[in-house]
Image (cartoon, rainbow, N blue to C red; front, side):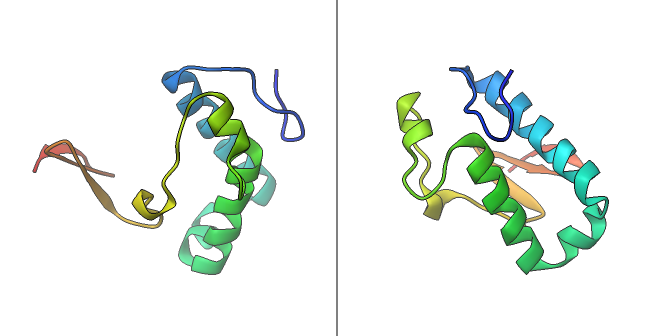
Length: 98
């Protein structure tokens, strides 16, 4: 099993999502201040950087490229209440048609 200091083994899309969820929950337990962190953009940016480091995105993206994945930072949205994707709007209340 990978830790914050060791890279994750090759995984599929569902496993990547599960790994991210695990990382976020672990950080929430360590921080103990999820609502406070989400309210402050600076703290949120630090949290995003921690997640990027944990999954190997970093500045160079070597870990993602190793698994033939690409992250286009301009297409990434952080701190938004909803996202439009393939004709649907995904939000905290659920998924709806766009």
